[in-house]
Image (cartoon, rainbow, N blue to C red; front, side):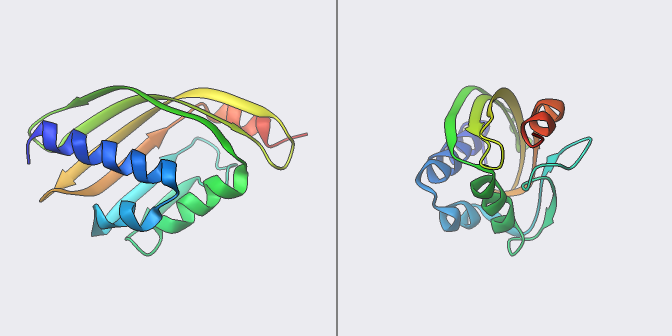
Length: 135
């Protein structure tokens, strides 16, 4: 698949996220997808590695559990014909447990195999996230 096709797929995944359509996201993943929000300290319910399609829904359940998303704005996409896509985006949510608002930049790395996501890594400001989950 071309870089443009893979970027279009990532945009479809983001649209599905906005609709809360996890099944549509899973349709874009390989059965053995390796999915993770990498964090120096695992404090948020979405942190940790998910192995395979069966575990990926727990990532999205963790986001929902954390509190309402108030901003999800992809700002820049870059891709190559080797199957890699990088995205820079703005993300914000209100922490349900503490009521604290969090706004930060995220970096998403996507790797594709045969037109499907086989590897995803998200990075975030883990110190900011940790502070949001403490009173």
